Length: 239
Ligand code: TYD
Image 1 (tube, rainbow, N blue to C red):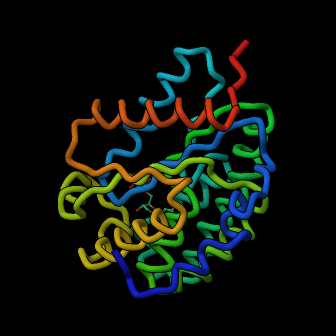
Image 2 (spheres, rainbow, N blue to C red):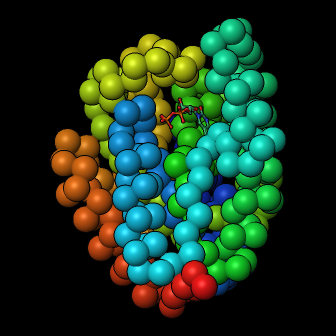
């Protein structure tokens, strides 16, 4: 898939610190992200993966974007509020980045440093797709903004839950102002999320929508177990 933008610049050491043989600075934890369009079943999969890891005695932190800390949740309310429909795209991109900076500093990095598995419903690729591609701010610029907000943390593994936008949007009962965008917007960000996955295949698993949630959960589980073992990042069991 291609949205016509240059994705090669996205696979820079800055955006993806794992490339070029750089060590994960946050070891010994493990950071899993679920990305996807609206109604792709991310939150169900976050819960299912957390439950399976917790059943093994693993220290797990589940979180979401925008959000994951008291300040980031306040930014979430601001950025998603229906009555802020006239918010400019740069303001929107900066607010998502601000929420992410807080989320990484207060929730994600400390959890990874103590050895937890962190599972986030969305992360920086949502900004690159929604604000960079969808809002037209440019994927490379938004990736740079997000990299600055994040500093030294990068997902170890990202699952892209792919779904036809028509199907996913039909599940949104009370659409936020991004969900309420035209179908074309959602098609654009779907293409962008694919580009991001294709640009760094070692760190992404694309799962086709349409399968039963239990089947997807099984695929996710097999992959996470394999990665944890091969990364030799055996998580710390909860006391
Ligand atoms: P949410 O209700 O969490 O939607 P979903 O269940 O689809 O994750 O709302 C988050 C919305 O914010 C969603 O429409 C995607 C959007 N978003 C961005 O536009 N940029 C971002 O960086 C992030 C994290 C989310």
